[in-house]
Image (tube, rainbow over all chains, first blue to last red; front, side, top):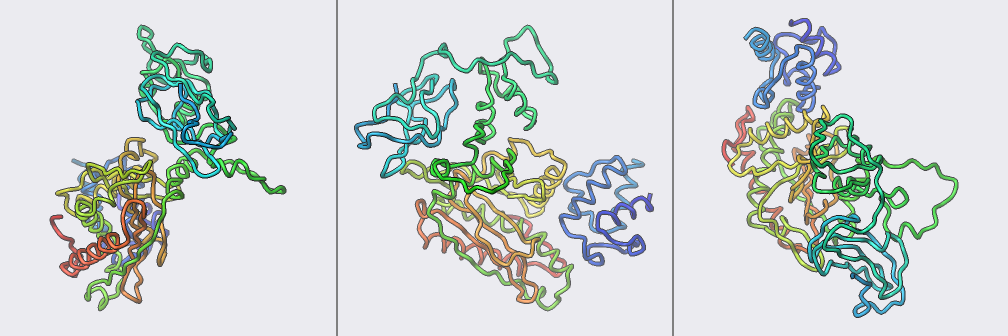
Length: 76
Length: 380
């Protein structure tokens, strides 16, 4: 799952796969702004066939947190 | 009968301008039917009574003083464009109920805008113009997007012609009101809080920008209760004050400019506003914005802060008297500019300046209360 997540993030932010790691966040990825956040959400929903609530989108602010949320949704 | 009013117009002939109603539609007494252009001014013709309107004029047509412009009928029995019988193939058909007939062009436009046929259930037949009027675009190809004066102009030769798409035409029609407005643009500079200037990291600016729009929406909503003229519009020598405040937020992410209505935000926190904005952006990117999402806004905020725009002068939307523009954060100067464009027919410069001054003060105070983590105010 994390491999897929990294690939999605790489595509959305337009960055190398190798630059994405567990500490990645808007603070470490310059391209990660509010618009890219929404694009990331759309891409993740498509890739993992899940749905994020608007409240959740606002707080998807780190790689770790995204992993946790996706895991919870895939394995409720 | 509605005639070119000879009692108020002295010209022998007039030119028909915009027609605001569609043939066969049910109108109320006082509704604007059309404009007539004289040598001195543009006169709006209102309906003297309620009923079904039979138009006897067309846009850009020259008519004599006293000629019949329209006839108002009690029932819709007069002869009009004969529609082709056409069922909408992908809607559920209930053959036992009466359904309107649709012309082929109306069907195409309905499908293009993803409308429900139920919208027209009160009609016997629906033409392209009826659908276009509902969406808010002109349907006649030769007049689309062009004012009366433009139609009389000689078009330069040796040009390539690319027709505008319906979305762009709808945008033009909405903005055309701004051309009739008498506008000024006032600009105010907001300085970012000290912690942002000391720590000029991209993450800090990103966080501020993400929260700033929500703060501006909340503070604007509050101030519009005091500055009611900015939540109003000019029409036919009167000011129409909206009873409610409904801020529209302009989104343009390469799928056309759309102004979504945020609804009543009183009592919302900045986080709730952010959720609404994010949801609208998501739906915009997935082509899920409905006509209802685009209706009802009374004041517009347009945010180009992600486009590296230092300062700009946005255009006022139809049936509004002001618009607020948010520019990009100048990371070297530690500031951003708010531009308020307003209609002088509705308010004075001093009031607009006071509105902007109070908005700046409120936002600056809100930003100063933020901690370095960038948490926003909890309650509006």
